[in-house]
Image (tube, rainbow, N blue to C red; front, top):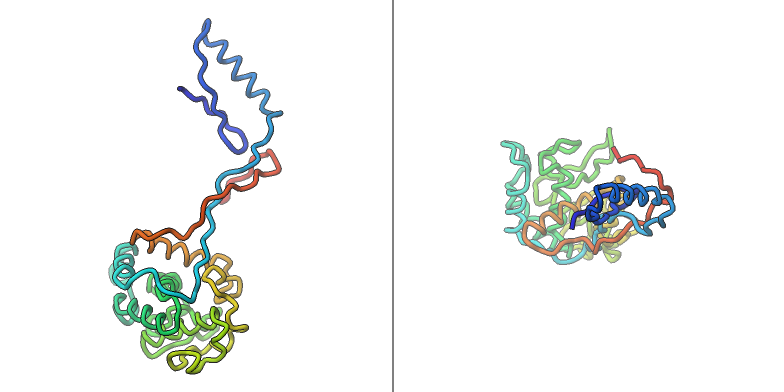
Amino acid sequence: MIYWPLATDHWPLRLPALARVGGSLVLAAFVVALVGGCGSRARSPVGPLAEPPFVRVPIMGTPRLTAGQLAAWFNGRQPVLPGTYRATVPVETLIVYYLEEGAAEGVTGDVAFVQAVVETGWFRFAGLVGPADNNFAGIGATGRGSQPAAFPDARTGVRAQIQHLRAYADPAAHACTVPPLQNPCVDPRFALVLPKGKAATWNQLGNGNWATASTYASSILRVYADALSASALPALRSAARRLPAPASSARRPRPG
């Protein structure tokens, strides 16, 4: 069957081609009549498919990706530019730190590593924090004129990030001491997270939790979803849903 697409506000209207009867005038008249009647056609109750939302990803929990999977994804997916990786230890070592420190505090170390990828631009450190700071999550980098935190080595920097995540996610982490922490406190901003446990999921970060950007959580979860996909693990998005149809029939400008 041949289809004739007629664009409307939200969906294409498809018409089966009519058999030629005494020339093409019948088809032309049919199309003109139907298009002319589209003004009274009932509006489609739904709009286009929305981008499916991310499922809830807890900050406290067990990682889904192994060290080998994270390393393979990182080395295979980053834009390959010679000499741009600037962390003070190889990425394979850094990944092990994230998984070990995360396991010690019950934090999802694989997502914490992805957070560091996002924060540092794949460990190129083009922002306020330099590679020698061993600060992989922008701790203390609150704006121009601020003094970001610096740590003596990469493991300590990872530990500080993990402890800071636990402060956000665990209401039982009432103090930066052992206990409740498993390792000595190295997070200089642990006490500033109030109340403890105010962001139990990665989805809740941003909008003042860790970062001001409203897209902070989605930027992390998109990259994490890519890492999962590279290892053939299930996606992070729920089922697609339809947006309500716009109230106005006028065409909206395309976002820039």
